[in-house]
Length: 317
Ligand code: DP6
Image (cartoon, rainbow, N blue to C red):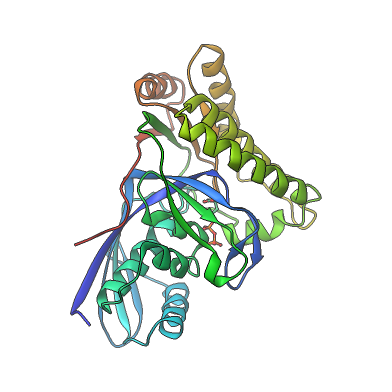
C-alpha cells in the first residue's frame, strides 16, 4: 500500500444513453452506450488511510454512505484494505445533468487501485467502477468509449472506441443550478415502466450500430442526428412512465431545443443531447462552436455557456 494515491478522471457525455438496469445490484444496463469524454470537466481524487471511510468534495464534508458501500464492494471483490479518507476536487457542475458521478467513481476506483498497488487493466477498472455508477465505466478512456452491456458482472464494462480525429465540440448550456429532483437511478426505474421501453431498447441497438459507422466516417452531422434521436427517445420514456411520470426538462430546455432547430435551419451543425437535468449539450463542430455560443448568449442572458471538447482518459498524479 502507498501512503496516498491520486487519480484524475474526466466526465463523459453519452451520445447513446444508458437509461435502464437489467440488474440494479450489479448495475448491468439494458442497453450498450457510447460516450464522449470531455477535457474541461473532471474530478481529481486523493485517497489516504484513515479511521473510517469519509468523503470531502471541494473541501466540504459529504455523506459517505454511497462511497462506503462502493469501497466495501471493492474490499470484497478485489482485496481488503483499510478505511480511507477520500479528498475530491470536482470540476463538474454537480447534479445538473453533467454526470459528476461518472468522473467521481472512475477517479475513486483508479485512486483505490493505485493505493493498493492493484495491477488492473482499464477494462478491469471500468468493470469495478460500474458498481459505483454505470456511467463511470466510460470515464477511463480518451475521446469515445463504448460500454458493452454484457450479460453478467464479468462481461459488462467499457472499452475505447477508436475513430479518426474529428473536430467535434459541445456547447454546454448550463440552465440552472438547481439540484436534480429525480436521481438517475430512480429516473431509470420509472422509465422502465413506460410502455415504450422495449421499443427504445431495440431502437438503441440500431442507433449504436449507425453511430459507430458515423463516428468511423467522422460525419459529425450524422453523429448529432443519431444522438439527438436517442436522447429524445430516452426523455420520452420519463414522460410516459406508468409509475410516476416526470421530466428533467424545464421551459428553458424547450427554448434551447427550439433554438437548436433554428440554428440547423440557418445551416449550422447543431444537435441536442440531454441527461438527468435541464441542461442541453449542443453537438457541433469546433469551427461553429463559438458562433453558436455567442448567438445563444445574446438571446439567453441568464444561461451560462461553455464549450467542451474531447478529453483524455484516466491519469495519476
Ligand atoms: C442520463 O451513471 O448516473 O447520464 O448507474 O444509477 O449511478 P447510476 O446512473 P448514472 O446514469 C447516467 C445516465 C445518463 C446517461 C448516460 O450517461 O449514459
